[in-house]
Structure formats: C-alpha cells, structure tokens
Image (cartoon, rainbow, N blue to C red; front, side):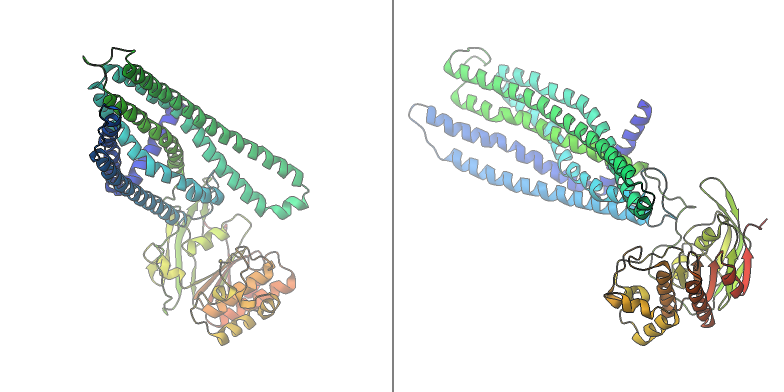
Length: 565
C-alpha cells in the first residue's frame, strides 16, 4: 500500500514537472522578481528604522532621505510584485490551457465511453473543468514561495546575527520547527485531497447516470432508494471535504503558533534591551534604537516566507492529487482510438468502393469477434443480421473508422483506412445510430451539415422525402429549434426521420444505419424503410445492422454475422 502510494506520488509530481517544463522561463523570472522584491524590504526596513531612530535620538534628527529611500524602494517592490504576478499568471494560463486542450484532443479519440470507475464523462468533465483549475493556485504561488523560503530566512538570520546573537538564536530555534511539522501535516493533506478529488469524480458520474435513468427510476418506484443513495454519497463527500479543511486549519494553527512565539520573543528581548533590563545578546554594546527597530521590522519577514509556503503547500497537495488523476486516467492505445487526425475534409466524387478482409476485433473482456469479408459499391444496399452481441454495431464502428481493427484491413476507394484517410472517408459517410444524438445547434445546421448558405429548395425536398416536414411544423421554433443532445421533444422515429432528412440533403456516398427501425411501430418503421430505399435510388449505398426481417428483405443482400470462421 505504501509502495503504491509512493509510486502514485512520484507519478503525479513527474507529470506536474512535465506539464510546466515548456514554461519554465516564466517560473524562473517570477521566482527572481519575487525574491528580489522581498529582499528590497530589508533596505526599506533599514531606512524606516533610521528615520524612527532619529526621532528617538537627542536632537530629533529628522532627515528626509530615509523617507525618500523608503518610498523609492516601495515603488520598486510594487513593480517587481506586478512582474511576478504577470509571469505566474501567464505560466498558469498556458499550462492549464495546454493540458486541457491536449487531454480533450485525447479523449475525443476514444473509441467508446470508458466504463472503468472514475473515467466516465461526468468525471472527465470535473477533471478537465474545476479540478484542473485547482492547479492554477499551485502554479502561481508554490514556486515563488519555495524560492523565498530558500533565500530570505537565511539572509535575515545572518543579518540579525550581525546585530544580536540572541535574536538570531530565537529565529534559529523557532524557524526550522515549522517545516518539520508542515511536512508531517502535508503528507496527510495530500492523501485527504486525493480522496476528496476521487469522491467528486464519482459523485459527478453517479449524478449523470441517475439523470439519464430518471424515467426508469420513476417507473420502477425507486425514487426513495436513489435519494437515500445520494444522501450517502453527499455525506461521504462532505466528510472528505471536512477532512481537508481540518488539516488546513491544523497546519495554519501550528504555523501561526511558532511564528507568533518567535516574533513575540524577539519583541520582548528588543524591548527589554532598549530599556536596559537585559544586557546580553549583543556584541559589546547594547542594542541601539535603530538596530532594535530594524530587528522588529524584519523578524515577521523571517516567518512570512514560511507562511506563504504553508499556504502554497495545500495548493501543491491539491495540484498533485489532480496530477495523479491525470496520470492514472486510462489513455487510448493504438488499438482503442478513433482513426484520423481530426482535420476538416470535403467529400470526393470518386465512386464508392468499400472492401473488408479478415477483420477481427478483440473486446475488452477478451472475446474475439470475427467478421466475414464484404464489399459494397455505389447505390448498393446490404443488411447485417445476427443475434444481439454478435458484433453488428462493432462492425459499423470499424467501417466508420471509429475503432481500429485489431486484425485485418478495410479499404475505402482503393486506399487502406488509416489515420491518413479516415477524415476524408468520414466526410463521405452518413451515420444513423440507434439512439440519435444532436449537436448543440439549430436543426437547420444539423440538417444541412452546417452549410453557411443552405439551399432551401433542397432542404424542403429532403424533409419531404424523409416524411419529416410535419415534424418541423409542430416544433415551436421550426428550423431554429435546438432539440438538445438526446433530441428532447422528439420521438425515436422522428429523430431518425430527421437523420434521414440530413442524409437526403448532404447525399453521402454511404449511410451506416444501426437498427434504424428498432423500437418503432410498424407504420413508422415502414416510413423509415421507404425513405432508405429512396435514398438508395439516388445513388447512396445503404448498410444496415438490423433485426427487422422486413427491412432486411428489402435490401439487395444480407450477411448474417456469427458465421465467420
């Protein structure tokens, strides 16, 4: 268990370094300007101590040069702080933006929804949204704070030692205790943050699953059981969050306790020394008012870098928890990703020719699907039949380049279907899934394939041929309606007829239809079948995966899956 935790920690830390590596120059400039800004406080405090010491001295020397120096150094520090903020924000924006873009590009190439725990779409949305943004605080605060801790306390300690060994001894004793306790608390903080992040992802996945099954939950009368389950999960998330907060408050209390004791002891020593009650701790002569004021001014800054690092330490724990999740998240392999490069492509006028040879696909459970060789050309129609689970939908996905075949080859228009040809091939396809999915755009864009200036006559013909004209008439906004991802307000048959209308308008070379008549009444199924036949007569090839014997009988050929050697 401990070894697994250490490996996870190392993996997350290594990923953080890798993500930030291209932007290291921003981090270096931020660390330099941050340290220099804090170092300028020392001469600034010296100028203020000289001015205040002059007021306490006999004759009341009120020279204005210390005030001028104090103001000039203050302006310089403000400029350096502004530079620090600019550099760290640039670094954080670029790291988070690049990471989110890269991960999204990786996720959209997955062949199918991930079913492993914590890798659902809701967990992914939480990871690439609010969780990834947690890395900003780490990127903007941790590196400058760490640089200040390395340089400022030793400098202040040495400077204090030149004036009073007693003050230096107080700082030397109080300071190192803070990092020791912070390290001990930090290990617990990271573990608690990781558990909280996991709980957030699981909660999002659970919520999405329950929302998708809301109708079934109500029909089964399981509302109370689901509510009780949510209460349990919310309670677990609350406990994880409170655990993180308890550790944060504990670490802050430890830090402030030692810092307050250290500053208080310095103040007591300096006060009694200036009053003449203490005669030790300095070198030969008692502390002067200027030295005493200077030590009082810089003592809090000895602990301030430690305070900053303590705050940033919790940011680091959260960032490492996110990095661990990023590192652990399953990445698509060569055999489990969508083919293509995501480039825009235009359909060609090359006559359709689709050929498969020796296709074999290995499922995640190890089962091997074997597919017969097939060939289809322009205007031809083909039915894929067979019992459920035999691989009809998988074969359609392979033919569309949505999965990579483990064995065998697919040729499209005389070229092997691979990353170089998949984008252009999909530009020639029409896709009719069993459960239609609509983009977040008006139906006009969906039906016309996003055409900037759609042909209204062609669109009307497409709606007529697919028997979808009446569907638009009853929708409140007509072509401007946004049905939502699952086609809210549309029945299954209506959604499929709109998909056919899109095919009639765009005229793809091949339509891949997955159970186009499933779960439909006989009348609606007949309308879908007739529309497919009309589409085939226009020159579009039709390849249907179906259990419908009537639809299969209307197509030119039928291939029954499950019989391949």
